[in-house]
Amino acid sequence: MQLNRSGEMDNVDRKIRPIKIFGYVLIGLSVISPLFFYWVSLQEKLAPVHIYFVIFVAIWDLVTGLGVIKLTRWGYYLFKFFLYLLLISFPIGTIISYKTFSYMKKNNIKNYFFKKITLQ
Image 1 (cartoon, rainbow, N blue to C red):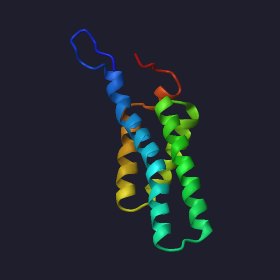
Image 2: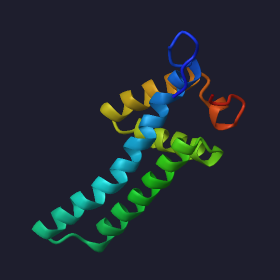
Image 3: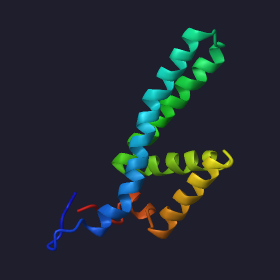
């Protein structure tokens, strides 16, 4: 976090911070979801397809979260794909996805991922 002369956080850092927090949330989900499904599998028998799906989604969330935190191009595209999938999760996923897309467009977040704007 950079402070300017007046002691306030730079506007650039403030704009990208919610997106980076979303990246940390994705990484957290990549750890919590397999643990939860492991606990559920101890309670009842799950089909192998469920276990493989949970592992796939956990790895995808981890990679997407890392890409968002590191502000990489592939992180941007994986994040947008994640948001498009979340868009069909009516009603809460739709709201989260819509608000995030609106925020990204309003603050021109794409430029941070494509290095047109650098963090101080």
